[in-house]
Image 1: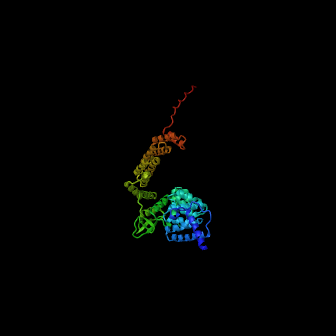
Image 2: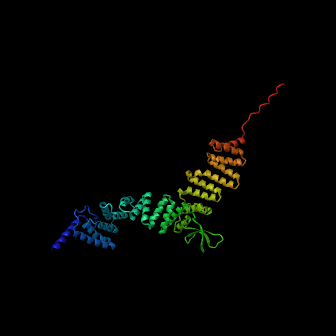
Image 3: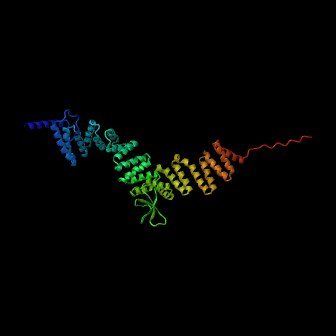
Length: 464
């Protein structure tokens, strides 16, 4: 009878503790409003442990809703056991009752500010993508208690969402030190380095992400832009023999560029560490947008494959899907292909289109473009066209003494001394102390000698 009385007394205490949780028995409450003043008796602790083990078993069977009342009862009987509360919070979370889970986790952190596991659990539930500021507020203080991969990983994600690149980079760097096998962390680190224009570091991070399995079209497109900025346009081109191969195919982890002359089934090939290979890989995986075609054309242009670049630019212009923000750059790059093909009319015409689209950016390049064409004609021995385009350069930028001097020298060499002197005078008007001042004055005086007085008559002879 004494034993029965003791169990009855213990049961009354459990019921009293349960009542303090409000509506917990009906599944509506998550945590107590106040802690019991006294620690549980050994019988209460044992009863709580029994309920916890029953609930824990249900939890690991995936029966989260069945585990909740058992774990809740254990937690109420022995609220000092944070492990009971933590598993109850997880059961609520996995059962889809996030509000109850959050309440318990917040209570744990309030009473135990150094409880890393509760902080990580709450942050995962809130999601760095959805509530980055709250996640940072929860996790950042926990770093002084523990240096753990989940902390750095979620902090990095939260800072990334807030576009706080430096903090995101620092936390991703720590994350990959603790977990170097995380492809997503390496990928995000590559994105940050790319945004900060640290191209070599970005390439390294992206390459590690690729080694760990990242293989999306967007990934290859980004890596192509990195290699482009590193000037690895075609990479270390080799010759490969591929039976039945065709230019443009990826075979044996090589991009076949062009057939090698004089050898059957032989091709010049670009390696994976090249912008053009990554463009081809992105296309193979389904990307076909104006942006990727634009980058591809720019790669061929930068590799001095002008005909290939010109064909791509021409197709893009015909398609008419160019982004308005890229029009100036598009026409400027296309003008460079024309220059590479010695098509001077299209070079200047397309440059004029670039100036029309973005005058503040490209107007300053026009005079230099005329000089470039002029020098090309000079190299061909066409002195008349050389002078013609220098005159257009001067007309475009009449305040440049260097252009007047260039035109003056061209006219002087062509025997057009009067025109040369006109230009030399303008040089000295613009720069009275020009470095070639004396030479220019001498040439001016050579054509227009200074006025002289008539010689005086000889004196008459003195009479003897």
